[in-house]
Image (tube, rainbow, N blue to C red):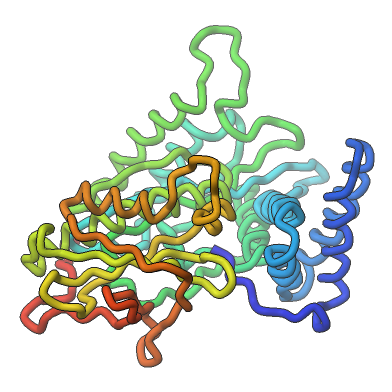
Length: 403
């Protein structure tokens, strides 16, 4: 989700160095009271950066910690996520708490995924369903007027906090600027992706945010699972017609960052399934004639796995899928001795389940190369060469537009 720039320690800003010092102090703390002190100091600096001029101090600090202090990285990213997806706002001297949330819609298709705009009637219906099935009674709601894709979502913690603040003000009926969506790249060939219903839930200070937090004296008290089921039924009635020709899954609505990661995790196997299905239908290549090559890619640690597809008769790559790494455990999967499943083994098992019997894994870590002309990722062939995917000329590369 967040793209962190490269920064040398000698060029770190004073605020970035302050973040690193406070994170280190918190990670070394030996008591809850000391924890509270350092957390307060860290939160003060984070809030100043989140509400200040445009900067990437938090991302720079995280990059340094990722390379040198895994525990510190977890501490800082948790604090940064918490403070950027929540906000304290005031209306008529009354304090309110606001939380940025998202409800992922994960879809895959052999056609083409739909766009992201919502009609006013769609938006009104979704907002009513959030109020009825997800938010605590009396909460105030504001939603983005679009089903947001990953490319449109914030790329810095400052941008996330801006969304939280603006949607919170809108929910309270106060003047607020519109949330800016990042520009999208070319997505016409995407066969599996997520769309997000994104909004803010605002409640009086200290009150429950979600309906499942509200205690009731009888057995009919809502649970997280019952709220999810009610939301899935209600949201599908609104959104399923938009996703004609797609297989759709509605995930549990929750706080912004935890749900973004969960959607990413659920998309990975769907992307492989969509790719194999599409190659079998659009390119008319039987699964038994497909060959898949898995390569770990990254600079110093594994950042993603790339899967290149070819036929058994050729070493040319005809299609490719990216399997992003979502945790530090996955990034060092090769070195685990705990009996955990290795990520490439998981990918290979899924491919074989989909009918691709020839699956190969390349040793080592490859540089994450991209095409100089179009910027598309390159994918491995059986010889260990990173290649631009090229389908045979007789195959139409564009998925069918079914919407």
